[in-house]
Image (cartoon, rainbow, N blue to C red; front, side, top):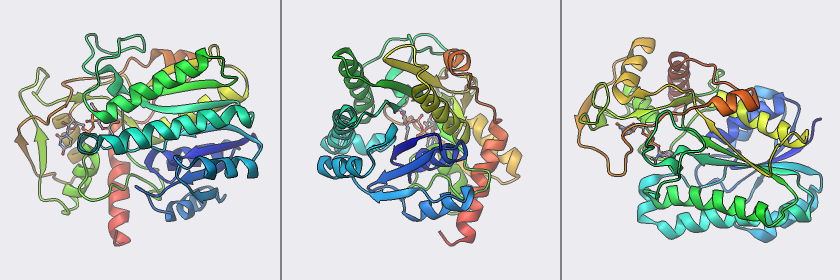
Length: 343
Ligand code: UD1
C-alpha cells in the first residue's frame, strides 16, 4: 500500500473516478461525502470496478468535530484530495451563503486539521472559471484572475487565496491546485459516471438525456458569439484522464517532489470545441440524433476558453489522452446503462 488518502466528495462525479484510479495505483482510499449530490451505492460500484471497497463515511466537511474524529481514527492519512463542494453556478447566485459556507468552511476545516495530524499535502479542485474570459488563449496558469461572475466562481478564487495565505504563513504541508476545464464522459466500464440531480445544468448530461428521450430538446445557449459557428467554445476533458492527474499530484506530494509550497496546474486538452461541434461529434459517434434549438445566451457564460496544458504536460508528465469521440461514447454508454437499471 502506497499510503492512505482522504478523498472528500469521493462518491461524486470526479471523486469516484479518482478513487478508482488511486486504488488501482495502490493507494488506500477513505471517502467522506455528505451525499448531498451523490449516492452511497457509488461505493459498491467502485468496489465492482477495482475489487477493493473504499472505507466510506457519511460526513460533511463543515463538521469540524466529525472530521477530527475521523483523523483520530486514521492518524496515518498522508494526503487529501478535496472535491467536496457545491458546484451549480445558477444555484450559487440564488443561494450565495450556502455556497460560501459549504465551499469555504470545508476547506478551512481541512487546512486547520492537516498540521495537527501530520498530513503531507492537499490537492484542491479548482476551475478554469477563475480566469473569467481570458485576454489570451489558450490560457496559461499565469493569466490574471478576473472578477468572478458567480458566488460559485468566487468560492474557487477565495479557496485558492486561502491556500496561498496559509502556505505563506508557514503551513508545513504542500498544496496542489488543479484548475479543471470541462470534465465529461464516464468510466469505460459504465459503472460510474455523472449523475446530475434533476434537470442537468451541464451540457453533456443534457445531451445524453435528450438523446435518450428523457429531455425533449437541448437548448444551445447562443449562436452569436465570436466563434466559428457562433456557439461558445470550451475545453472538454475526459474524466478518467482528469482522475489520473490527481494520482500524479498525490504521488508528487508523497514522494516529496513538489517544487513550491503551492503549485497550480491547468487540466485541459488544449483544444477548444464549440457547443455545436460537440453535439455533432456526439451524433456521429453514437449514431443518435440530439434534438436541439438555438436560444438566447445564458447569463454569465464565457464566450471561449481553452487550456494551455503545457505546464501539466511537462512538470507532471500528464497529458489528456482520450479523444472527445471516445469520451462522448463513454458518456452515452453510461446513460444507456442508467436506463437499463431504471435510473
Ligand atoms: C460551468 C462553470 C465551471 C464549473 C462547471 C461545473 C463558469 C464559467 N463555468 O462550466 O467553472 O466547474 O460549470 O458545473 O462558471 N450549454 C448549452 N446548453 C445547455 C447547457 C450548456 O448550450 O443546456 C453550453 C453553455 O452555454 C457552455 C457549454 O455548453 O457554452 C458548457 O456548459 P456547462 O457544461 O454548463 O459548463 P460551463 O458553463 O463551461
